[in-house]
Length: 282
Image (tube, rainbow, N blue to C red):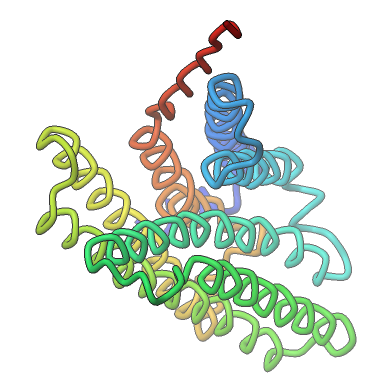
């Protein structure tokens, strides 16, 4: 079994086949996100760039970039200096983090707005602006920290800086997983305790929130574990050309399958805006 594994990893044919398969899978998910974005835009042109549209746009960009990277895997993995390879591989992961924390922000806003209405707290303002600022600040902090790590690796490429970079990405993924567990869990419980409108719609929203929360929590937790372990075990590194099977399993589990499932679950289009009724002047 070990010999077969080594033969697959060292085979140029297997490497090309697996990485081109990843390229095709990412391209497919990217195309699905783009089609869904166009459908949403055609339905709600008058609303501008909503959270739902930005989420699908980020999914299109993330998976499109991944498809291009795996399509040119030889050039990417053999790039020198090595820091450019890490930048190309890590940047889509950061955009993936932004896309799915944006969905988390949307759910947190729904939860707080529902609590605001249910408790009739008219003396306090809605915390949506504060949540939005927190989301922006968190993303800016993550991107700036990652840029600092890339610069340090470029200036002084050593194992310590690489270790810090991997641990940082593991911590970011763990925080995202906790965010889904906290905010997704609270919204899930709220929908269960306080059904909205019809029972059928309440049950559907309940299922959507529960499913997406479970998927996103699992994928970020797995990413955290894999990246954290690979920081201490060089045989589990993913930024090398001769790990095609590990790359296939990792990216399928933490990005391709979760994204495909979430896009499928959130495939329903927003309701049409009712036409404005014009009355002639008497």
